[in-house]
Image (cartoon, rainbow, N blue to C red):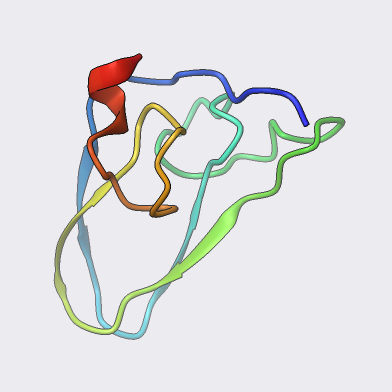
Length: 79
C-alpha cells in the first residue's frame, strides 16, 4: 500500500452533528479536506466513515498518518 499525501500539518476542527455521518479523506488528495471528494479513485485508499454520536467539535487528522482514524492523534508532529 502506498503512503497517503500529507494534506496538512495540523488537525481540522469540525463541528459535527449527532446522528450524521462524515467521510474522512484517507488519501490526502481531496480538495475538500478533511472530507472525501472521490480523489482516491485509482489508489489503494478508501474514505473512512465517522458517525457522530453527539454534537461536538472533533479534530479530524490532516496529515493522514493517525493511528486513530479518522481523528487526530498528534502524528502530524512527526511529518
